[in-house]
Length: 371
Image 1 (cartoon, rainbow, N blue to C red):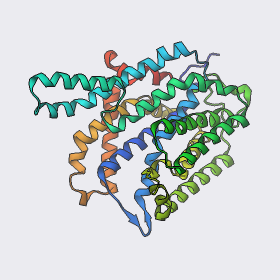
Image 2 (cartoon, rainbow, N blue to C red):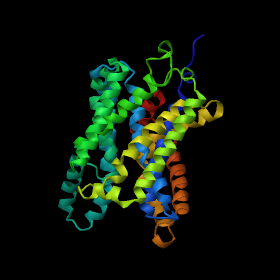
Image 3 (tube, helix red, strand yellow):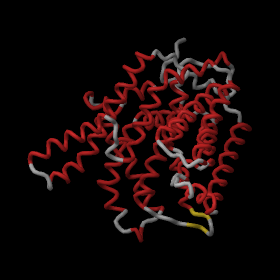
Image 4 (spheres, rainbow, N blue to C red):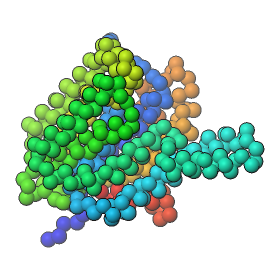
């Protein structure tokens, strides 16, 4: 009997993607809220900030889990995946530049407005983000550009592939120790996340080789959870998170980064990286959501990219004025309310636009439905 794509979907990966977009929205609400709370010596916002920093690593590991197992023909991949992503990135980069253009137009002569808009378009075509949080579009574009090459690594045995991942992570540590911070070097870390996602789901999930499928989302029932392994992964995840908070509280660890001119503790702490990898493994090793929960997760997953694209407009257009005007009253509670409201409105916008043929391409809805 044939199995439908819906029944064959791996809902664990829908769960990962949903948590990733929640983390991204939360971190942006926390940044706009600028709050800091503590219980004794432990800063609560350190834990919540740690969760927020899980968003990008989870998305990158998800990319590896989904794309590397597939047979990728470079030309077809670039035409069907990379080109649509590039066009979407250009559109949204230019769209986010419009508020600045409108504000700047007041001080420009009529003849200078068009050149200013043209310059913004050129920056968008070069994928120079008009909004700092759009940097991820350039990162995922670079990863997609390299994906045909990365997909060849699935031919490696598990031990050499694990060695490659550890080598890339070691390179990240060495270049940070040397005080080198650059987006080109950061790509090494992002590739490590991509390969780790594939390694965890395809090689280390405890699945017999006969049950592995060529499609990253196929075989939802194949990866049978092992309670002891899942519990151990969650314990290790919690332990890594606790180590991050410990190193945060003791300033000398952060200062070791600061003296090298690197304001990147929140991004490159070893325990940020370790916690992200362990969290992904724990989520994937657990039981697969089913029934109504699986349907809800599929909806949240398929609309996640749209939420990423519009949520900054929502935060700054609605919730910044409502919650973040008075820093003295800003708290974790107000940031949480803003995050919930931002998620609800952003999901509504993404879901509605995803049903309109002319707009759905700008949200990559078709690609997400397939993956």
